[in-house]
Amino acid sequence: MSYVEDVLGIVEKRNANEPEFLQAVKEVLDSLKPVIDKHPEFKNEGILERIVEPERQIIFRVPWTDDQGNTQVNRGFRVEFNSAIGPYKGGLRFHPSVYLGIIKFLGFEQIFKNALTGLPMGGGKGGSDFDPKGKSDREVMRFCTSFMTELFRHIGHNTDVPAGDIGVGAREIGYLFGTYKKIKNEFTGVLTGKGLNWGGSLIRKEATGYGCVYFTQEMLKTKGEDFKGKDVIVSGSGNVAIYATEKVYELGGKVIAMCDSNGYVHDPEGIDLNIVKDIKEVRRGRIKEYVEKRPNAKYNENFSEIWKLKCDIALPSATQNEIDKASAEALVNNGCIAVGEGANMPCTPEAVDVFLANKILYGPGKAANAGGVSTSGLEMTQNSMRLAWTREEVDQKLHQIMVNIHQSCVDASNEYGTPGNYVNGANIAGFLKVANTMMDLGIYG
Ligand code: NDP
Ligand code: 2IT
Image 1 (cartoon, rainbow, N blue to C red):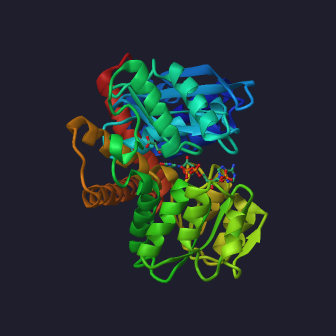
Image 2 (cartoon, rainbow, N blue to C red):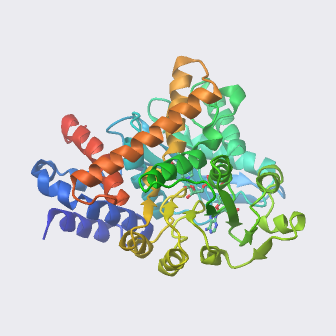
Image 3 (cartoon, rainbow, N blue to C red):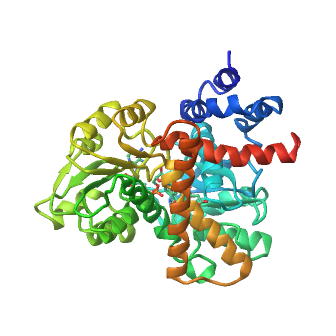
């Protein structure tokens, strides 16, 4: 058996009940086979065994009281996966589906994503099975405060720097930051995605969506294509989806459908983003309210049927495994030429195979959605310097980072004999930076 297969066997045995984590590890290790053949020193130093095992995993009780005065208990997580190239960095997800396996898959992906950004950030992820949906602001505040009264002892601006993810936006980051500041009696950049008045960076809110479109634009350029006149499907209607949509319009494309976990809206004339922002950012409502304002748009309760609509470009920006084999085939059969992942691991392995077999430009999340964490890195830099860059400066840096990530993927996929395969490119380029550092630091580093 090869070294990669040996390690996969160990991972499967140790983490048998965590399918999302196994899926993420398998994809990366499969890409690394040619790298391992070329670098026997990685086996000698146990790089793969070490990189698949989190440095530290914290699971904690989060008690809080609801508005009726009842005691509620949720489970909190922080997985500090790899700190070879910098402090642990990665978001917090609040969603009822969260369990250790989800946080581990996200933390594992984050190692390679953060390495691709070119900034000094290690990989981590955290969250809770708490569901912010339908909770009052006060309930969310009490939950966040309780969550931070444990998390604070594990994080720090040079140790571990959390941010947002599903269910964690500006409101939650504010309550978490307020509690950290109070307990520690210090004002540091310990979280990113902060408000603009208290250390946040311009463009952070927009960064994941904008970055995903910048990355997809680079992929399109390799075929002499761009967004002009293209019909685009953007799944989700949260932070990533909204700002991906905004940038698609800026570049001359048209977004024809968006969704939430209840269903999707199809607006052939082009989604009116101001209506979506009002529903989602202002009122925390449901996407089906959209059709009340746009009678020509249609609402469909079957979320996954969004991928059966005809489009040129797909930007899945909701959640993991939202595109399965059948959805991928529908996209290909309808003439889709590019898929840029705004979400983390939104395509199943079978769906990825369909895209690769049909030579679709397919940008995996750890490259295509790295704009968010990149701009978090820029927020950390500004915090350390105690100054704030302009919108134009941050956007220009973000754009350059996405161009660089695209180039790193192209170079690595060419060097290892699979040109056009961004999965291999992203996994190999991200891995090499971390693995070479782990070699430098020794096995106890
Ligand atoms: P938000 O909470 O702002 O929005 C999430 C969106 O996806 C909502 O429309 C939500 O619908 C939908 N969604 C969530 N879970 C499901 C589900 N199980 N089935 C169907 N729809 C679902 O999160 P973000 O926009 O921040 O995150 C979206 C994706 O992007 C995630 O995969 C995240 O990991 C990834 N990402 C986020 C980054 C960031 O900076 N925020 C950076 C890089 C990646 P509903 O309201 O009905 O739940
Ligand atoms: O998945 C991700 O990259 C994020 N949710 C953003 C992480 C961050 O630290 O900004």
